Image (cartoon, rainbow, N blue to C red; front, top):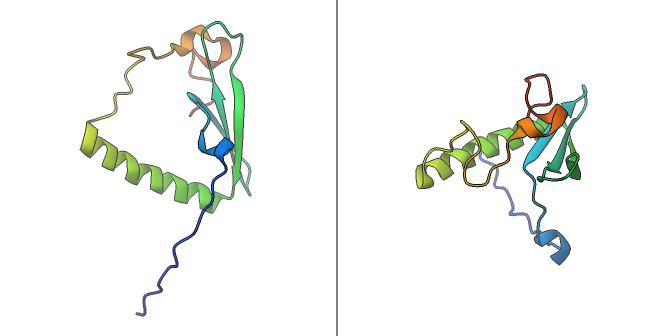
Length: 110
């Protein structure tokens, strides 16, 4: 079987994009043809989370993202240790204090 060589992609990032946007909540929805990921920030004292970015992608790209995240999480945990999901620590935010986004299992999952 012949291997295809992939050309590296050359990317340019604008300074306003390079600084990034903080998010501590991702709300994921989908239709048959696309996945929508809303990245939000929840901060103490604010009445509700604010969506800072929305990413829309095909199901195929969503699955590629899932695979890439899984691969990178494995690499991260091999280097820094297991990521603990048992509860907020070191300044984490308790979702139970933010109305519909916490305190039950009926809301959106990240």
